[in-house]
Amino acid sequence: MKKNENIKKVAIAAPQLHRHKVKLKIGNWKKHFDLNYVNTIIALALNDFDDKIFFYINGYLITSQNLYLIVQTTEKSVEEMVTKIENQIINLLKTNPQKLKENRGEVSIIADDENLFYAARKPLFKIYPLENDHLIKLITGQKVTLPYFDRDLENLKNRIHNHPFCSAINYLGGIGPVKVTSFKDQINAEE
Image (cartoon, rainbow, N blue to C red; front, side, top):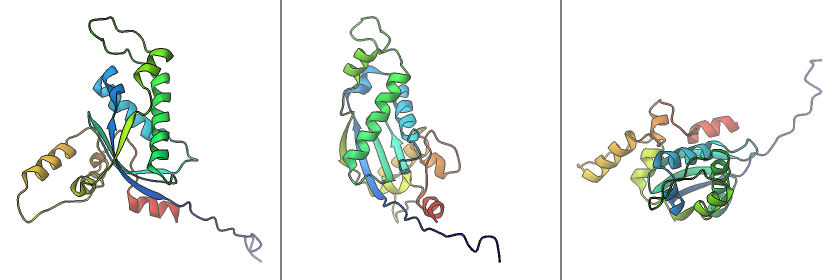
């Protein structure tokens, strides 16, 4: 008899994943911090989910105004997912303080809990559906070609391919600030 013939094999069901495509408009809390700091904190928050939470980022773009996000997660509703992201951001703001920007000529002060609460009150984002198919394809590593020249599409391609906080970097073979799991990679990992 072989050694492993008596071992029982138990099949574990894969978690039910829900795909969300959202545009998150960054709230007024961004005005209290530098733009690069806000983008970096958002990127850190997207990377900082523990292994118990299934949160696969298929595409993202962080701009000065919005976070465009395509994810697969066990969270059924977009609101629950955004709440978890907001909690991560607030936690990171508390553990990685930066001086608040100067307001009306006053001297900046180090962000303590009271100032942070004022600067970063929930909700941090307004939730909108992401309906731009060209943007969705570009940030998930797909090509978009049209039989005619479209200036807006070319501007979008240039913006995405040259943007430091975009998943296009990962799909082009580079390493971006947020870990991206392509849909194919995620299916192979579950099998």
